[in-house]
Image (cartoon, rainbow, N blue to C red; front, side, top):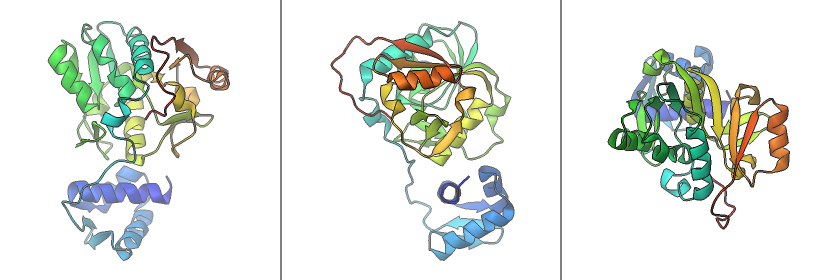
Length: 268
């Protein structure tokens, strides 16, 4: 993990919890205690946090913090017809009675419409999806512990030892900031870490990605392409991107979209 990624995690944990022990920062970042102490000293020297005995303290406990991704309400409107087509194809891969994981995202959120009539055991870190499925379906819904980031509609915990470690799923459905030769990429270290934790609980990974996800952006690798079983994309996906995924052994499912007039915009 890069230094700036550790800094972001330290600052967000301090903002979330007020006071954070060094041991918790070590667990959240995977870095050594010595490295974390150096990070803490540098952040304290620059006036971003306060050092306390055995840990760190936020300077302003009420200071708002955000994730480095686009807000859910904004992303939800982008490439909507393509996202719906992709989401429907993803739901068709589910078998009633199985346990699945659905990661937060505006494309995965579109699965709600077709999941409403299904009977599944669903773990999701998407707060809007959980709300909709609880209200509109008979699916069993499980939520991980953590803080709700309202703008992105995602529940994120910086800790490894939480309730999802006892969950076992046959499939995980997720999106990402982008897809490239290095694998699935995110732009925020907390989101990348949350996705990596969920991935450990699923046998098969299915990625929902409209054509814009093949534009390079983000800097944090979540997993290599070899971890992906299937990618569902739309009919505007570049042939070079499809060939890249196929060469990595991924089954690429290309779905047509009804509305061909939606703008070629970048989705989050």
